[in-house]
Image (cartoon, rainbow, N blue to C red):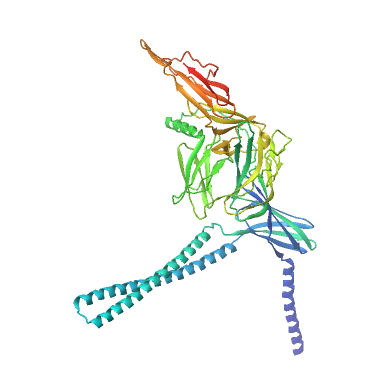
Length: 627
């Protein structure tokens, strides 16, 4: 009986041991295998707003289910844009995105260590200052004791010598210890300054976390598979600028098309294939719907509202806007971005925070932004604009111009002809660009490896350089402006796929300033304003001997006679358009008659007078306007 009970108990123990083993074996078979993929960024397509990042990784996947974690990814990705592909007999079952705060925790621990070190040094500084205070008090006591002994006592020579020697030795020791304490305090304060800078640099990072993409895959058998991960990130983009160079008015235009790329997405793009797209994934791609348009009576607008609307409209017609961008402390904010809302037209502020932006027609709102600061919008206004950006947790952005330019050959006239048009693209570029045409966008591929760091700085790359045939013409309106402006008209410009942007003007080797390349409002001909040319003199003079005032009863007659002189001081002949105007009466009591403008074309509606002449080199012409 006892033996049977012992056998039964032993059998139950074996059963109990077997059941947990069976449970853990089953759980181990159902749990997915874990694997980490430290992928590399291979390609980035930068849009006008946002960028698509493509990563790749070759992984050895075992048979069954595996959770493959792509680590060290930007925390600012659009979850809906994540795409994962794998070659071979691999099936992607699910994709999960999650933040990883371990990096942030590491930085916080580093901050705590620095704060602890800083506290220890501050204690040492306090102790040294106490020593210095004690030495100072002893110095005062010795000096005071010396004065008392000298005033109230008559000492023997030997006693006086001993007292003087003691005073000298003790004061020397006190002064030496004071100097040593000052030196120690200065050294410790230098260490504190370094620690403060390090703390500031660590605290500037607003988002210290990274993210992970967990991809669950199923493999029927072990295999090595190439994985591709793509996603859209925010806080990235590019905008165009141009360099327009004119050697002289008998030479073609040299147009350099440049891209200004920046990103603060949370990850560095090092040695990647860079693509620039004219698309914007943030725009709504839904076609508009036309609804019924109902007319009804409404109350009239108040007079003050109409006046305000008129002011806004007149402000929006301003050609150029000026201003300064400041941080929350009131300090100038260099290299902040100023962009016309809804366009790619923009500039960056200079080292003193000032900006000047030529506006396209219809521009009403500007967007101001800088790395680590909250962006803001402001209505375009006449006069000086002062903009403040809040939140100074991140450092200010800078402009970094990468030396990716176009290298001239030994012969500046060596060009490669583009068969599609009369444009010529320069040969032997230092970095080449390929252009791809898509149904709604154009993509430029930078053929060489490129680097854009996660620092918000602006990296400039050349897209293309063109030689453009242009018709040069001068324009002058001396009644408004005494200068002559050089303009250029370019045909067949549409095939260049240009975007509106600011242009730097260079004429005859001299920087003339900035202008706006406005392709939105251009027609078949692209008109460029190349700035003032001091080599063409324009003067408008009131000829007093032909101008007079007469009274006939209650009527007064004013006769005006103007002479406009144009002198060409250049080495070649020029074509110039001169515009002036006759006044238009708005009262029946005022009449304008006897209008004379020889060889001028008069617009009957606006009373604008236009002359067009060719002026030979070193010659001048004169035109007259009389009424």
